[in-house]
Length: 409
Image 1 (tube, rainbow, N blue to C red):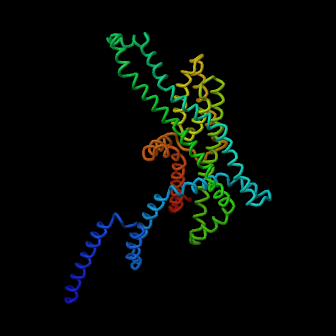
Image 2: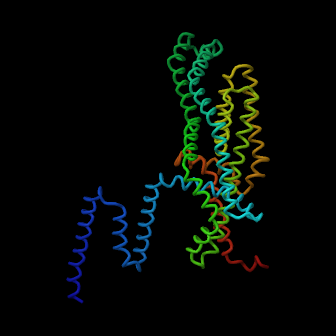
Image 3: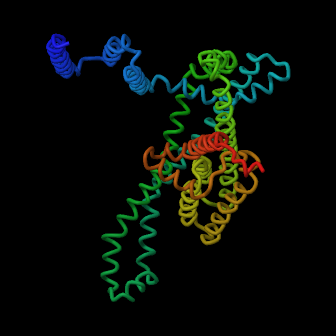
């Protein structure tokens, strides 16, 4: 026993020295070492001692980090596949209904893909070019709108407000010209570019999607082979846990699927309604305002307020009966919100995604803070999934609690 202790100490020192030299070597060659080499080295070191719980966790953590890096690196390549998968997921219920009418799945998949891309192509052909022109016109007149607003600030009505606080008319005009007018112009232009910037980017993206022939082909094969792909994926799950996984996936599908499909339908209806009504009211750029309303409809509260403010600003400089147009815009968006809350959302989206208003505002702020505009878009379904998982956990915990004798009695 006494003889083994001196032999173990040099071995430990040797291992420590070897680890230090290995770290130094890794630091030296880090710029040229591929993550594939690192994950291979980790697997080489940890797999022989995988019986250790610490080694297994470290190995799985290494694999997870490697997969995150791998998918982040090839995200540009995966974009067509992601778009095709989402589109196939959205129209899969149509394929299922056609298949129930004795139409082969390949034929129903082909018809669905052709119909979808036909609608997208028609929308691009008839709506995107005029929307881009209107968007460019809005940016062109942004400075004009700001200057008109500044002139109104210099009128006697606004200058009298400064006079009440002891500021002379000359000083008030100088403050407005030097401080307020340039900032209003910059703020308005930044606001319009930020809100309508999606038009050019979205249209460019759509054109690229249409020109990419690979996307409809991927969609077709995904739709055609979706049942087989689902069965193969479930076969990878151990039989003991398969029922639980299937049950969870079905709940996720009910929440996400119904929300996405319903939200898209509601957004199209709201955008179309607002565009038509704004055109009837005589508000300029009704088409691009309608598109903006439809896209921002995915963001509760924030989308409504933004659409209302921008449309009111445009209505204020559309000429004619300005007050009547602004009042019409306010009534339009408030009535739209009431229609969505009382009729469209309950009938189309359902109540499975219903969230408390306070929780909804909180999740919008949190997701928007960390993920920006994308976070605002995914805040509602992501929070709905989190709440569903929490409710399942609470229900399971409640079911495991022992029942007291007096409660039974």
